[in-house]
Image 1: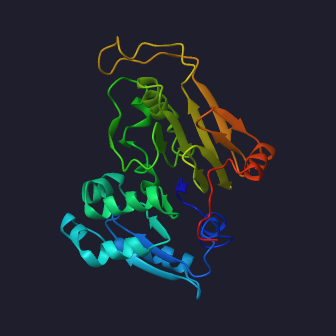
Image 2 (image 1 turned 60 degrees about the horizontal axis):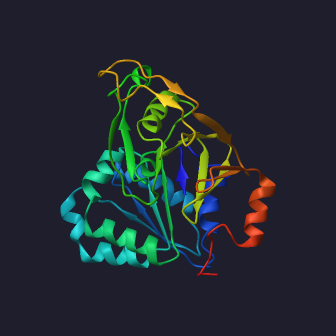
Image 3 (image 1 turned 30 degrees about the vertical axis):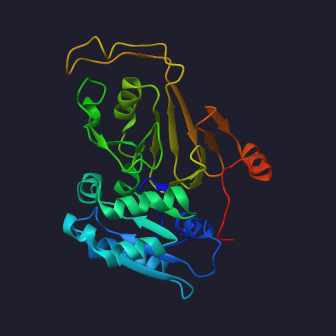
Length: 278
């Protein structure tokens, strides 16, 4: 579950409630990781209150340096978690602290071998993809070499996630990333927009916000390889979709999914959901 930031965690809890519904166990173990934030207690407290429920065990995992990532007690907590939630802050803080650590390895093992939910908001969503954008001024973003990228945790391949997308006008920087390698699909999450990623390919939008899909698989031309640094980028035939609550997208088939399409996939069992905990 990737969230674009500023989700409603006070009133209807639409997106956060959906995270809980993805795990069918009556009593859930939830770990809230605040590694992205310079103010971990403050960041974590918001989600402690939002997830608070007598049926669930909710804990804060405040990790501020790499030395903590070797602590056996923290790794055991990850092993037992049904839901692992990353707060916002700086995605580079998450990867610089957790990257290659025993905790990251255990998160990846659970994701690949067990039924669990990895969720995050803002920076906690940005770092989920294999390639991570962490800086780039929007007014310069369609000029070559003005975007900073690094390796993310790699929960989903051939995708680049960006957050606060509509509200901060980040279209141009995600367009640059897609044209540099059109194998990647750009996913721009607006605020109060959530995206459930099912089976590694089916995207299902929830919340009040808008998610933008930038699909480069039919890209006809770009000059990005020929121009010099900071020169303007030309792009031909980049496909743009928007999905909202109840709509989706198939990353494998590059197909837009309307509510009826998603319903058919669920009925056919082709959404990648197994719900082993049910």
